[in-house]
Length: 98
Length: 435
Image 1 (cartoon, rainbow over the protein chains, first blue to last red):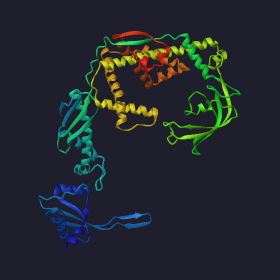
Image 2 (image 1 turned 45 degrees about the horizontal axis):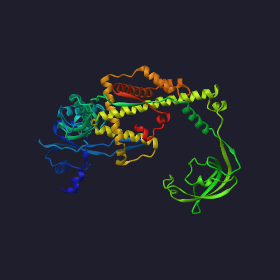
Image 3 (image 1 turned 180 degrees about the vertical axis):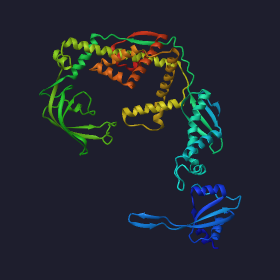
Image 4 (image 1 turned 135 degrees about the horizontal axis):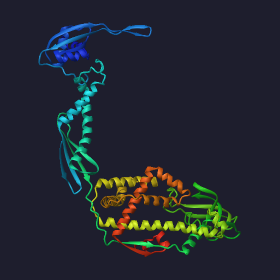
């Protein structure tokens, strides 16, 4: 897998109550990833960027919320979420803005 | 909390304070806890933000805040613990401020010196003793007459003491300058109010005469661009007037607001005023001597920070009075002696008040207030102003207290009555100052 592609796979951390809970309880970290990313790509990207060992990756598609602006019905972009479970002994510390 | 104090000099102290890490940490955690109830962070419902997340985001800021507050409170605690009263603000230098470590800092400050008011036995104070004589009253009446002088036109060359009314226009090297013109200026010859040479050259002018005179502005003339320049004024004399002193009669008295009683009443009034001034001058003179004596007998070392504070206060006052501030170290040095004097006297007087348990006597305040008010048009109004204004009252009370201290000191020293003339008292020249 080429490096350029891997840098584009992870869009950012997904911060929520559930995500923090999982991070503490199960060593799982949640990311927003490119819509066309595969599990293998996410695994490779996380291992490369955070220098950790990944145990497993689960991905799912989220529909963008539909939003109304006055008369116009609009839709936010669909996106893809990845739950990344790390091998025991590894952790990801995101700087500052978790 | 661990505190250790060392003396750097007789007045300077260095205090090292150590606040245990737990105390800092407890305080930080307590604040973060209360923060979790309030903060809103994206992705979390309000109030449901995990402590860990809040700590990560706000921990450093809260830590800084707690440290700076702890510096304050622990400094005061340390002072009470060690029973030290500092004079002026401390200089605080942190030793370690790492999170999770004990907070340690060094505060350097000065303390009030121990004041032992010196024995004033054997100090001689000269108290001027003055009678307002008839001749003194006459002199004042004479100067009142001079103020009320009336001017009559005369047709003769102007002489010393005459008033000359003229128009003038001045030039320097043929060019006009700011304020070079004047119309109907009344100049009194020999009064010395104009630039030197101007009045002299007017001596002998006739009404209607035109003349040009040449003067040199003095080197220290306030308008800098004119100082030291030579100017030519062309003048046109309109009138020459001779002064006439008014008769001392009832009209004269009326001019000074005496409706009834005429000259006799005026003299009484003048005498009353003079006596009031005299009493005040005598008091001031005695007080000055007492203060000087206190200063001389109590050569105490004073904290530098107090002197600096006092210098600033003096500068502030000077600024209020003269407008133009003098800046820089040199200006400060100019105030140093006066500031030192004030600080020492303040400390000594405070100590005397404390030891002798001198308290403000309400009767004296009342008396002082009445005597002060009596020189105003409406004494009652002045009194009620003071009664209703707490700050003014405090100033007055401080004044009375000071007076009481002076009285107390006077009891200790030897007071010599010294006959003095009214003039010598009111206008002390350097020679009779020392007597």
